[in-house]
Image 1 (spheres, helix red, strand yellow):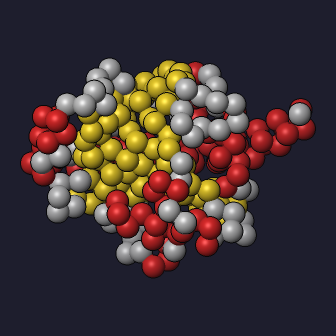
Image 2 (cartoon, helix red, strand yellow; image 1 turned 180 degrees about the vertical axis):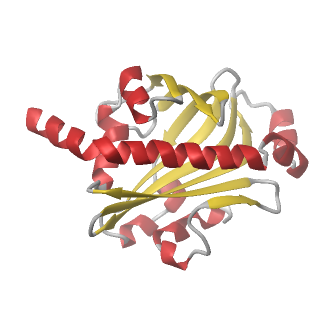
Length: 217
């Protein structure tokens, strides 16, 4: 799936597959992950990102083995949109230091989410923390089911953009050869496993956490 087709995720039954790794013709590495989350509502996921997750302790609970540290930049109370999530995490045994810049879902999905009652999309640009370079795009789309929700996570690795305005990085980084060499299939497979593990873990404790925090308010 090309990034430009992201809005079709609102009708996942029409897609050829729900989980897997795909090399696109332009070199982009597309990673798809489906996680079923019993007793979880899409709004709980929005609450986790926008209101609850504040500390490294919270972040580690999400994936106790792979998550090491987190902080926020430009975080406003009650929302993740516009904030930068700074993280250290292992993916496939490799330490990654990332800057995840959350954007409004309309930037990716336009008005397609309005067609799906209760749907929530968490959208972001994925970048390096220690260098001013963005390297990909991602979304977690939560769709209501009678038993909870389905979370459709998608990553497109290889969309390179210099946050310092370097035209050289923007040009060379987006060559198909560069994309293939920097975002290898093995990286995509490791990301697929990591994402499914963390979202399965989240599904295990989020309903109880949300209920207890709601009672405390």
